Length: 216
Image 1 (cartoon, rainbow, N blue to C red):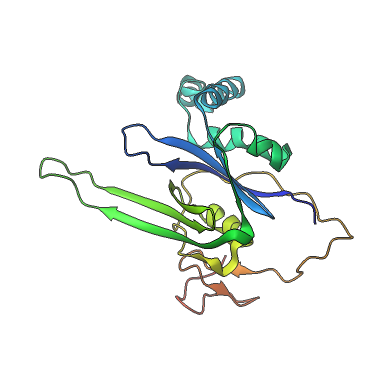
Image 2: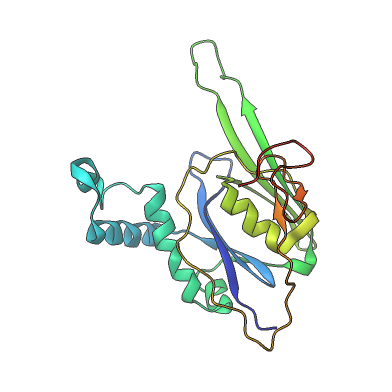
């Protein structure tokens, strides 16, 4: 089967141990996960794209082209749908390519931290994406939106442990993957997973058998 992009996970941050962090995008294909850098140049291109598109309302118009919002990042990373996977890998030196077959486990961990001192009331609430593969271990901070976790689970299956956040923090991609060619053999039964606990849901069920959450 030819390799094709099946999903995109924007806004993936790589902690560096310094004040600055590296921003990435994970492009999910039917054969691998590609961690592509979101460079300073790309940020400027995304701002220019946002300015050209314009914002909604007076406030949105003032911010368009000046501040990147989650929707701007999603819109910019739509470009990867039309790029060949090998071209995505070679787009920037340092982009990471992980073969699906070489990934042993992926965990989504929710961390809630307390304020560092008594003078601060702000802690942290974040989701970590930890990837174990034959190429090494990788850890990122990401949004863990339901659509992010769903696309990862679509290629990783039960190698993905953990669940998505209850509600998305960024808009979902409007892209619809191209239909599968008739000469390709595919699994016809759709697998569904609970967005609350991450367990697979019986086909046709309206409630999760594990946690009881209603399935939309």
